[in-house]
Image: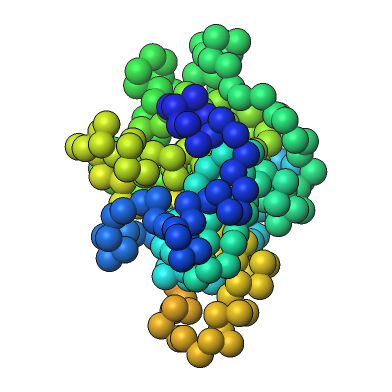
Length: 313
């Protein structure tokens, strides 16, 4: 679903005064869901060192492409009440997300996200064009099966199974549900690029995913798909980080309103999760098989006539 082609507000740049201001200059809500029904989702921080200590092997060049800078910042405070206030007042344009948090204007752009995470990717990265991708090659690279079954994380190769958990808890953030094992073509291509060490535009993907989530949660879109609940707010940590860097949190702290600054933190993806994915079990089985092979080879050498003769001497 492309929000730029389905929303009239995305056809022109919306200025501060145009951004849903009521007659008394208070920002109007663009999402009419009751705040108490909204759920702020927390990205998963990633303990890379712990993953490596538990057997997960990953080329350092992958993290040099910006992943370490991005993932490192996910371990930080999340302010659910402020994120909700941002969400219900948000408006999108082709190049920006504009909102208000307790009257403070907040503008998120791809450039701002790039600066936040100190990324070096370039502006204007083109969208994935499915017809230009060799999907047979992608499936062969990342999955143990082909066709429809390759869309399920359980059929991914161990390396990509771990990375799928990482990107679904961060870059392609979404709520964990029974259907969480399903991955889209975009997810598969992201995994393919990671495995091939092809640099991807992290800041562009984050901006577009956040922008699309906001678009889909507005009244017009929810009316089209009433059976799909749009009560989850992804990227709680990124939004909170932007509010911190923009001094919004500092201003609210001076208001002496502690209920607005209640803090939560996201989960940490580490070696414990590898057990859940049965990755560590695979490593242990491989290690056991290797040790068994080495022991058998040693026994064969020890039992050879030459060695026995030398031992007798």
